[in-house]
Length: 120
Image (cartoon, rainbow, N blue to C red; front, top):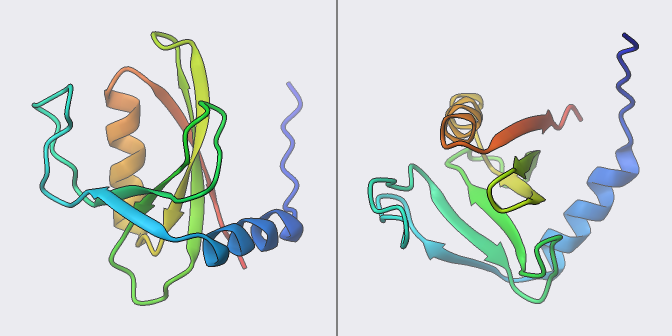
């Protein structure tokens, strides 16, 4: 099997621009419960970028971590067979342990995720 990974700095530059130009709305703060899956408690702030559009037709989702360096630290791509969709979630100011936790949670919830970490 061929394995391929190519970093593209322009991807991160474009994503930075989107984050800088759109207001970040936290509609599910740390410790709040998911509106449909009430057993799920958000371990970090979760929200969206106002005025953007994602693959699901809604705004772009963002997980907001606690790192002092306020920048995009990665993205998570989700494939949900039940909803028959996929989407990308921005990881903003997430520490390595926070990103590991988000990866684990998403893969335990019945959706499948891959994570791309920013290396610059």
